[in-house]
Amino acid sequence: MQVLYFAWMRERVGAAAEEVDPEGAATARELVERLRAREERYALAFADLAAVRVAVDQEMTDLDAPISGAREIAFFPPVTGG
Amino acid sequence: MADGAGARPQVSVQREDFDIAAEIEALTAGNRDIGAVVSFTGLVREMTGEGAIAAMELEHWPGGTENALGKIVAEAEARWPLDGVRVIHRYGPMAPGERIVLVLAASRHRAAAFEAAAFLMDYLKTRAPFWKKEHGPGGGRWVDARECDDAAAERWRDGRRG
Image 1 (cartoon, rainbow over the protein chains, first blue to last red):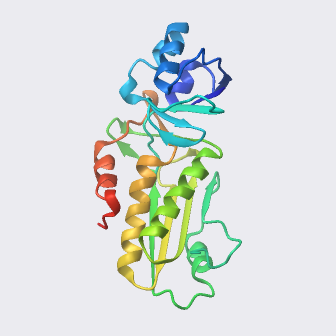
Image 2: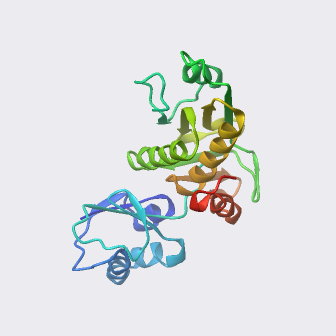
């Protein structure tokens, strides 16, 4: 699935978007756990789960949202527009 | 149905500045039932908690941001009897004093227009994918979300008005 990162998460991961094998992750939280275990840059980007917002196929949701069948998962910090 | 001019977009996410008077004119043109237009403009402030900033960079999510703004506009239209809504949000580099965001809400009477404009901004601040990075003497710094913005958005929950 396609995974997007924004703002300082993008900077820490070092990519705005990438194709990720979810390795059977059923929820966004499980996907984060797998990424964190994969490489240090993910551990850094997802160090504080309270600061992680998630959208599944552009639908704002939470880390416990199911992701099976999703095409695109976006991870980003709390928004600061306006 | 709020978009009286039909083809005109309700939501724009753009790099360029906007003309407030022209936007109000376009929103109200041809609809003489409108008795009130409330306009909110957000500007880049120079002084922040970290001192004076030289510039700001606004990141957005192409497609995702427009989608989120569209949902916020639809929710405002469902809650208030509006005759027009317009949201313009800029992205990219900006200097202190520049306009960042415009929200227009038009209705027959002022109460709905005032409330809808406040709702749109409160939801935009907490739900629309934008991220500010300030550039000051100490380098670049991502702006933290503010709890008071969450509290402001919270007051509209459960369909409450104001």
